[in-house]
Length: 444
Image (cartoon, rainbow, N blue to C red):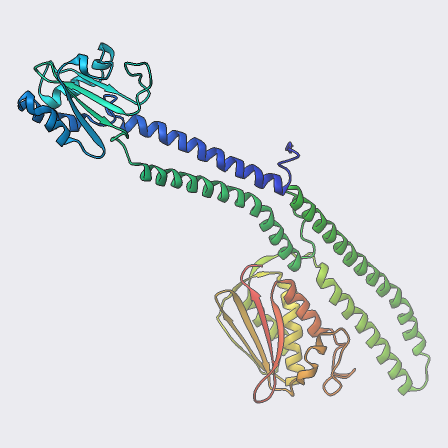
């Protein structure tokens, strides 16, 4: 069982929490960079990176006469490093002691090639002779005659410069922000994607299971509301189907009594009309039940060969009529094969009845399967093509009680196809006839 924090359980709280986490990560990475970079790049002595420069300058000044050393030191100074020469240690304005001369002495000796050379390095945090903190980096190196050369830099010369450091810190800030943003967006997007997948699944399968309530409180409220709506719709469809089933059973008894009473009618013409009306009523009831049963069909989704299914429908429906199939010998599809078979039967049966044959064409695109059922019949007027999908609607010129159905065939077929995430549309051919286009997605 998950324990939810009240503040973090909300969307606003989660966003604020991720902002705080991003800031904390930035601070930690920045601190780690400053400390680790300082450890890796720091020279062996605390002179701010002046050791390499000191070797060449000390060599040069040491070879010159004492009278010229002060002027040479001034000439060697730059905007970043000041060079000064002092006659002895007492005149050096730095507290040269055994502690400081120990730091980096071996490195300076190697650079100067003098085994007994002394060096003293200072940082701005060290205290001067007056007890005040030094304001710069200093490196003092003695000469063989006891005089000293002091190099002073207001900024350290080792490591990366300030602009590069700021750039790297900015990269850390950007990287940590992106990482937190990606993780946070994935956590927020996961319940949204689950909700979208469940809604899509519910659109193709009314018996789909409810989605689990995950994510922040606002998302859970939406998910729970969707689950309640889904439950109410499922209950409504189930109740409607049960009611129609009960009505069908209740109507069969009086229809049977009407048929029995009709046997006593002496007028053969009246008897025939009565029996025809009774048969039509029974047909309408059965067709209506089949139409509504499609929405609650418990048939599971499986993979099946659509081409083989089309061949079976043509053999059962067309029999001696000329219906041609043009498509691959095998085409795997996913869905409810019995429901798809009922839809194809309705469509091909219409082509046989009103077009006296036709052509069934199947081909695959990148995202879907397309099925065309063409017949050379009279077609359907454009202004009536939408109306033929309405229950019990019949075209007067083409359908009647003797040859036609009850007006549920195309509506039931489209309902089945749409339940699979596809669609069924009608178009008149340019020459003569009707084209029924059925599209089915690869994965339902």
